Image (tube, rainbow, N blue to C red):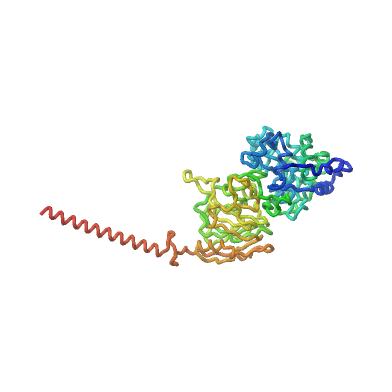
Length: 583
């Protein structure tokens, strides 16, 4: 698609800054950056210039190639776009730290960069900074990264030539986004005390250091001009006036050991902290926004893209221990107010089995790691069938643990919950974290369960509101509910396992609300699980009705008697023949 410089006149330095360097106050810079952000580029669009198209121009290396951040390398722009062995769109400010999946910050080109798929996945949503200690430090940060990079479990040090660029992009994001762009917007804050719920990204001290060590160069100025003139209409003021960084964010650079986060705060670049305590990737794939809103037509864009690589999920030494589809069913959840969900055990849950629940999207063949996972290990006493238990409410609520560095939070715009466990390897007996046994699921997403076909142009395109239904539970233990923020199962609580599953899967047996949470009476309730019944109404034994078992028993008995009679007749004939020969 052709690109024109629609904002060339207004983006000229003398026009954009009519009085020269603007006053170095947070509010003044915020108002300037927001008021001149005249166009929001669609994240993905089939009819308009989108972020893919924009990055191919802004980060062009040579004809047909884009320059990759973190790698100091270039890659074919078109043929490898969105491919697992190619490149995707890196959010320098991770989605899980307040950007989410909608609003202008999601597609703001000042913080989007082309990145190698695998390297991007390795960065995930790690904070910007040097390793905390050499004991847990990988150098380079990834096999594809230069030797001046490093990473540990929480931090990511990019190549030296990109550090200043990244720092100034982060300073821009802090001032540009104060949570006033949309109802779900968050106040993005740079801090030495990072916090996902408050939209606080770290580490400010490290970014101040990078800003000093890697000053603005021609490449960065050219890109800043391009974003303004061709796409958005606003400039990164810290590229134009680097001295404003110190005026707004200060110059104090703290070592890790000098940072005190006991008060929950820390340096925040003049902000008051996050304005939205929903945190995480709480936006959902923005299908409603479409092209004109700058929303995302299809959610995320890859296994990387700011913390989305699929990593093995494993907890303690737990495993399925015999659990399977339909053994646990969701019966309530709240996404507004304090997040919680309740489930009922339809079988006796074996000791030390580990149950995982995630709001990550299932793509049809892997988990798209864009949110979080919580896990419960069944205590030694087990959990009796019929027990209602839950996360955030109900029995065993204090035994859940958050895993994988993600943020488990139910979005009010609708999404899916999936429960699963890990099978054990039959040969070694070890838990296999790369395989999943799905137990149950529920979606209250506006579009229900989503499906993507591997290999098409929307591969891995899942936002927080999307998830495919695992085939193992599709039509077996997966619930589909019309969109509402909070739900509770109100159907019968007495019956066979199979009857209760059917009842729970029936959306007519659920009550939902956008304003009120579920009725707390279900928290202390108990389901009564009867034996499965056959067609004649009798209870089942070993998967068959009692009548069937009795008929089989009678058949076996008759067969045994017949065999005995045959044996007697045979023996009698043999005896007579023998006597005749002797006579």
